[in-house]
Image (cartoon, rainbow, N blue to C red; front, side, top):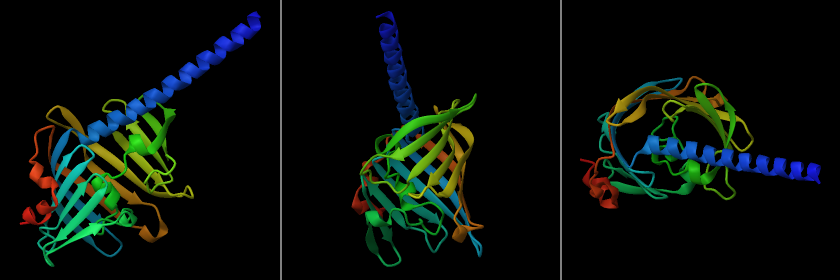
Length: 249
């Protein structure tokens, strides 16, 4: 009886530890999402796109409320100035002033490259929620970082087969994120660097996206956050379809 009781106690202990570990992993991811998104965020940033044949620079203003709403306006170069993007929940639109047309971007195009960069439409509007759409587990840990594996929930509207994310223990921000397709082939690596303080929040100000597919050899997209304001009220007028044309000027 004592042996059976000891075995039972051991099983209960192992189960309780497993559930606690899973809960901690989810708490880590939620904290990462909160640190990246804030309640609200306004940013000015510069994107540099390098391909085998050319290099170009774009500047943008971005307004967002959590993960649900975002509005982006291109301010440079002149030929793209005034192009706007709006995301509300799971819907996304683009306005092109040159042709005075609003275009709805379908879900099938969320994996398409955004404005010729190595970021996708899904990256731009954060349509996928890590905490909601992926199962999470810690697969490694050292003194400074957690290594977390993310696998999509069944029927989740996501584009990646697996994600490996390194998370800073100091800031609870991602440092390196590796994206794999459904065949478990590494497609790209996103690095977050140069953390700075904006108000009460710390935020990575230098992002580097390196695609790993053969056809993208020599490509790289870099984002520099020039200004950022978090958790202050943002005019709700930015998050209507009318805003696409209104704020493009």
